[in-house]
Length: 187
Image 1 (cartoon, rainbow, N blue to C red):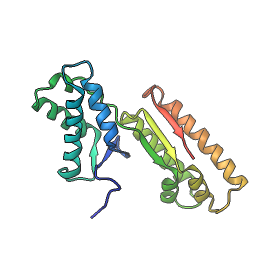
Image 2: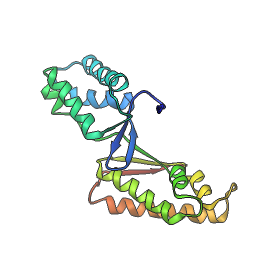
Image 3: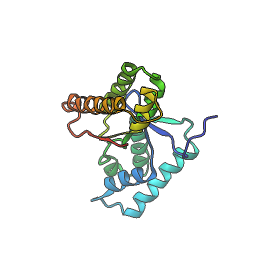
């Protein structure tokens, strides 16, 4: 059995990107859909908690496709007679977090080409899946793992610069597909 860090399943965005299904994101999505309708905020909050409860207690998988999640939410709203709210759901998935440390682990020490291929796959998958925010984190640990060193070196600085340029280039490549894509490089 796999133990998730929280009770809700991950949301698959695109073919290979995952995002956390955060209760706050879910509540905000439903509150925004209900805004300007006859549905009071407390009811949108109750529906959000109901969806959260279903995902935590009855959904069998540890990952749910974003399209499947939104379809389930729309069916729930329709069953409650709230088709007008379902029609207003913003189907933008939650922010995607990509761990460079994990990608470096998967690529293996010294295998920078494999690392860049994995990073490109993750970023393009997130963009194709509709993500508007992608946070790249674990940068320093990932760089040190690729360089196979415990201390930060000049080679680490060069690789970090290469990664930054690579991510910026991918952002430009994704611009025609996702002009609203926002990439954040965190340490």
